[in-house]
Length: 106
Image 1 (cartoon, one colour):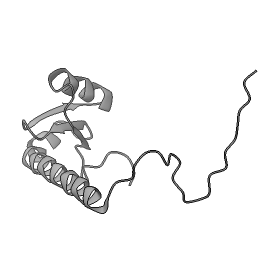
Image 2 (tube, rainbow, N blue to C red):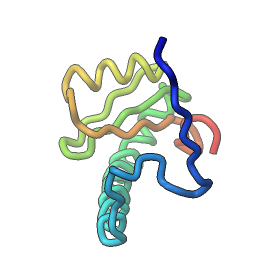
Image 3 (cartoon, rainbow, N blue to C red):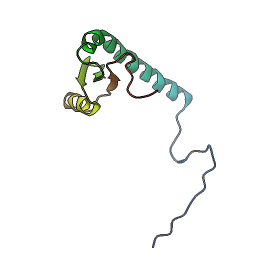
Image 4 (cartoon, rainbow, N blue to C red):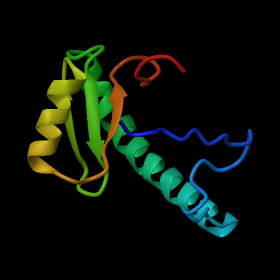
């Protein structure tokens, strides 16, 4: 039988101290990249929303901003399958074709 050793980790400390933490500059760079990605996706969403919402209200839309492609389907899973067929490893943003554009609760 293998003996399990429980190690108590002080509250607020890193769980895995061997993994290096990000510097404030790296965190700021990642946040800026995420903001730019979100802005590019929002531009595409704003452009296609008026024509799609009439016929596809409450459907999911997945946006790949580098190519400008978007994929719509009634379920998130179906839209994701369409998106992954064309863009296997690309970053994709999911939104809803409704008044707010959000998926789920905020």
